[in-house]
Image (cartoon, rainbow, N blue to C red):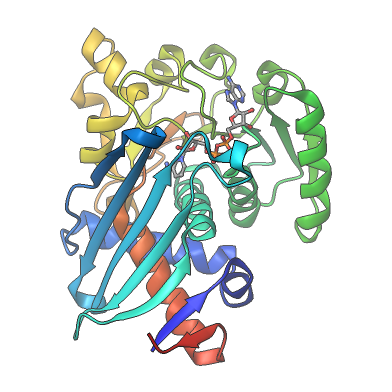
Length: 330
Ligand SMILES: NC(=O)c1ccc[n+]([C@@H]2O[C@H](COP(=O)([O-])OP(=O)(O)OC[C@H]3O[C@@H](n4cnc5c(N)ncnc54)[C@H](O)[C@@H]3O)[C@@H](O)[C@H]2O)c1
């Protein structure tokens, strides 16, 4: 039997807090070398200008195997379809049988919000009150909720490229996330968003920096979530050089894919000595996180398959326990 779980099914069994706990476990498992995460296979589909990416992982301690299939087909919106459709296939590590197919689009949004939540929880000041969210796309809602989930924020300023869309997003989020009791405030420019912010999260498709790092206040925590190619960056050189602590989800992934770090590294503006290490090692206490209230901490993440696998495994177990989803004989 294969359990099929939709976005709504996942929401019924798995909260943002659950997702953050799963992300922490995945980060620790990865940093301790207890996961097999082979290189992602990228298959070009030139006929339709698309690409299909296959992200496998195996975690022996969980008896879990999985592969997320996520495609990037930029022409899809014209066909009324999402540009990045995704599904997660979960297997039983003891038998190799496929046990579940889980909505990969929502799982990705959840685990990407959650890994930022894990970083913000570990690195931001405990008394953080004001946050900034740059980007209002598919990933933005879970990024916003993750910040609200780990700190008692009174205000989150949101900025995108199109102010009308930003206002609509902020209105919708104010309703959806009302339980957190924070004001979600749309602003037109990133300067307004980051001025005085204690936490800043950028999650955009921008290829150039989305805010001026000189404007970031002392003591702030910054999350760079969006960029994943060596020639693009959301974070400028000012924030990279001002950061007192630089942390990654995976060092290997960031140094392979993230222009935010690769470009200043190549220019010699920073060196590997400036990197503190992986968040998983902060979580287990192997390396320190924030040292002083006045430090600026920075987290850069490009994502990895172990995050998907741990989240999928926990979602599956909870759904089975509660009888949620559709069981199919195939
Ligand atoms: N780190 C990870 O694990 C991870 C996981 C999933 C997605 N991502 C990446 O996150 C990024 C965002 O994903 P999405 O699904 O929300 O994309 P999307 O296309 O739905 O939205 C992109 C958003 O970026 C905004 N934007 C672009 N340039 C901007 C700029 N200069 N200033 C302010 N806003 C700007 C747009 O207005 C839009 O709101 C993508 O690059 C995606 O690949 C990262």
